[in-house]
Length: 137
Image (cartoon, rainbow, N blue to C red):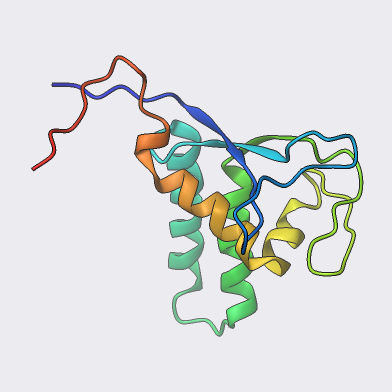
């Protein structure tokens, strides 16, 4: 049996406490399209991250560098942003979120990073409708 997955999935960003979909001033949902952990894009990003880790062995590092490298990997797995055209108020700041600023936002807004990271690793989100379902025990 071969499981077949979509390469990408649209993650609707939700409020970290209420779970409500976040919307912009035009009433559009905030959506981040991510690549699955089964995609070539993800595998290449993971390989680059592991290479950086190996290159760092024996050298001094700190948590900021490690956090930045993890953010780099997540940003590499984002295909596009939708609904982020205006200023988005995360944690009392209003950054203009673009693909260029996404890394710094992910590093500053932990709950947003978590939503992206969890979605990338959740293969059920990427499973094609006709793909065989796992039997429940």
